[in-house]
Length: 416
Image 1 (cartoon, helix red, strand yellow):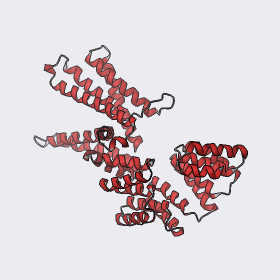
Image 2 (tube, rainbow, N blue to C red):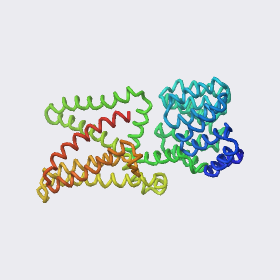
Image 3 (tube, rainbow, N blue to C red):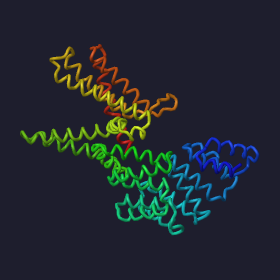
Image 4 (spheres, rainbow, N blue to C red):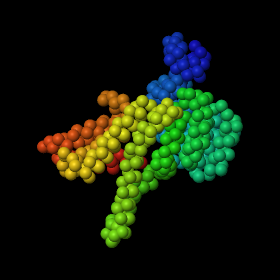
C-alpha cells in the first residue's frame, strides 16, 4: 500500500495516495514510514502546517532517521519558520552528514535569512558530496546571483540545466535569477519551459506572472527595487523607508524656499516621492488588471487577482475623476469643499482595495485583510457622504485620513 501511495504521490494524485496511506495506518498504526509519507504528501499538496503532526509522530517512532528531521525542516521552511528549520537540519546532519540535499535545503533557509555567503558555503558543501545535486546547484546559483557574482551564477545555472534539462524546478530557479537581474524576456522562456514540463508548478506560475508584468516599465522598475530591497537586512529596509521620507522632506523643504523657478524643483521632489509611495501600493493590482487582457497573462493570474485589479482600477478612476471635477468645480453641482475630500476618500479606498486578499472569510481572514476591507468600505461611504453633504461627513473624513496615514506607516514598516 505504501509503494502504491508513493507512486500516486509522484503522479500528483494526492487524494488517492492519502487513501492508500490511511489503509496502511489502519493496518499498522505504528508504521513510521506511513506517517512520514503522509507528511510529505501534505507538504507537496501545499498544506505544510498539516504535515507537522504526522512527521512528529514519525520522529517519535524512529528518532534516528535523518530523513524525518529533513522532512520536518522542509515543512518549517514552507511555513517561514526558519529557526525551527535550522534546528531540524542541524539534527539531520548530525545523524547523517552525507546527504547532499540536506545541505541544499539548509542553503535555501540561509538565503531566506539574507545570509548569502553562508548559503553559498552550505551549497558548496553539498556539492562536494554530490556534484550534480539539483537542490544544491540551484541554491548555489541563487546565492551567487544575490551576491552579485553574475558570471559564476550563470555558469552554475548552465551546468544545472545540462544535468537536469527536464527539471521544472531548475528552469523556474533560472527564470527567477534572470528576472532578478532585469532580463525578463529570458526569464519568460524558462518559466514557460518549467510549465511545459510541469503545468502545476506554482513557482513557475508566480514567476511567469511577474515576468509578464515586468513588460510594463513602471512595474519592472518597482519590481527591481523591491527585489534589491528584499536582499538587504531588516535594518537597511527600515532605514530606507524612513530615510527616503526624511530626505525628500528636507531637500524638498529647502528647495521650496528658493525663488522661482528653483522652488519648482522642491515641488517636483515631493511629487516624485508621492508617486513612489502611490505606485508601491497600487501598481501590482493595476498590472494584474492590464495582464488580464494579455492572451497569456490572463491565465497566469487568479480570479481574485483579476477582481482586485478591476476594483482598484475603478476606484482609482473615481478618485482621479473627482479630483479633476474639483478643479472644474464652477461647472459642477457640488461644491469644491465636497469634491476634493471625496476624491481623497476614494484614493484611500483604492490603496485599501490593493491590500485585499479575496475571497474574504471573516473567521479566517488576516487582520490586514479585515482592516483593508473596512478602510475600503469606509472610503466609499464617506466619499458619498461628502457629496451628499451629510452632517457627520467632515468629522468622518478627518478620522479616515488620520487612520490611513497611521496604517500606511505601520504597513510600510511591517512589509520591510
